[in-house]
Every structure is written in C-alpha cells, then in structure tokens.
Image 1 (cartoon, protein in one colour):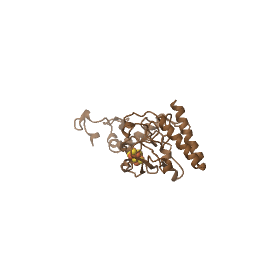
Image 2: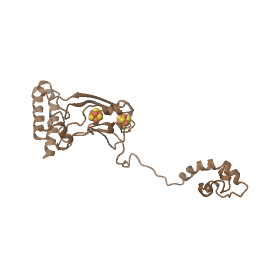
Image 3: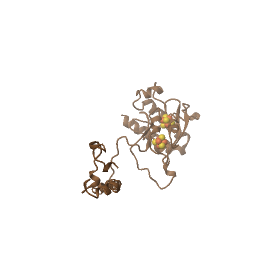
Image 4: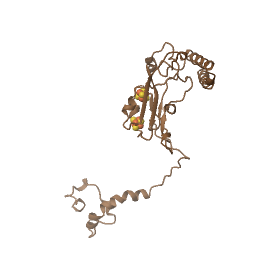
Length: 252
Ligand code: SF4
Ligand code: SF4
C-alpha cells in the first residue's frame, strides 16, 4: 500500500498527504502500519461527517421566510402573450414532442376570423393556429426545460415559482387558464383580431407594442352583440368589457 512505502517508492511529494488520516502518529511508530492498513478508508469516510458536525447550522424558516431562487431557476411554466394580448402559442406541439416525461398535452386549432354572429370562434394568436387545449402534468414534469428550448415562439417559459405540492393528483394537472400569463396593461384578452395592417411576422419583429383602438372597438362591439343576443351571457360580456376598459385605461 502506498501509505507504507518510502517516499521515493511511492512517488514522493507527488502523492497526496495522508497526515489527516494518521493524526497523532508517525510512519515510524509500531502502530502506524495497522492504522495505515485499517483506518484510513474509514477515517476518510467519517471525515466528511465530522467536518459537517462542526459547521454552523443553518435552518431555513420555510415557509415563513422564503429565500429567492436563482434567476434562471426552473419553476412553474407560463404561456406568454404578445403585447396586445394575443397568445404566443401557435399550437405546434413541439413542446409536447420534446418532453421526455410526456407531461404536456397540446391540441391546436385554427384561428377563425369569421364574425362571432356567424359562428366564428375568434382569433387567439397571430397567424394560422393557436393552442386550444394546453395542459402540463406536474406529477410527471421533471423541470428539465427541454420544452421551453423547443418552443419556436417563446410562448412557453419557466417562472421561479416552485410551490407545486398538493394533496390530490387532479390539481397538479395545470390547464391553459392556469398557465396563461395575466392580461397586463395595454393588452386585450382574446379573442380579437390582429393589430391593423400587421401580419404574423410583425409580431415577432416587435412592431406591435399594445392593443390598438381598432382592436378595442372590436372587443367592445362583440361584447354588445353578445349581451343583446343572449341576456344570460350578460355576465360574461361584462367581464370582457371590463377587460377592454382596463386595457384602455392602462394604455391611456
Ligand atoms: S420541463 Fe421537462 S419534463 Fe417538464 S414539461 Fe418541460 S420537457 Fe417535460
Ligand atoms: S408552447 Fe410553444 S412549442 Fe408548445 S405548442 Fe405552443 S408554440 Fe408550440
């Protein structure tokens, strides 16, 4: 064993020191051989434990005190919006195909510019399609981030939110409503048309900065039509009108 060899035979000064494993002994003492042959592996292994015992104990007072995560921590997902409120997801399913845990379910559908009174379902994203159904199963997700790497529109990103424990399985399957980013200042909740004179590529070139007057007028008109055609839908229409008013106020 190298520990018992003279320095010149064991590689001399190039070998790591064994001093910590033979504390209180020298190679010349009669017990040095026994220690060198029997104790070093055990002492080396317990060394980590002993060193830990004397370190300062740090107790996290979670959940009362939450430490901030690293900026790029992989937490809960978010489906992002364009600045006018249209969704960035185009329902391509690339995220679902990239997921090694089969945790994502996407069903795309075609955007519909047919007026609502003629049965149109409206436009939810610029371009051809949008994600009609979007689910992430957090019982399966391993937070690897491959899905967000695969997303071609940056619709899917990951937040720093990590409190995802629950007491039943169903609540850990997040739906599109839960994953969609909130409608912020200057946005209008879809469905609504694309910004006037803009095409799909213009959204990715950053030419759309907020909902336009034309889009707000369209949403307000749809709300009125819905209210007059179906009194029972008045509540839902009021919500849409509120969204429009909020966005209008924010854009002012
Ligand atoms: S983070 Fe990984 S495991 Fe989770 S949904 Fe995305 S690809 Fe799947
Ligand atoms: S989140 Fe991205 S990758 Fe997934 S369906 Fe939507 S656009 Fe495609």
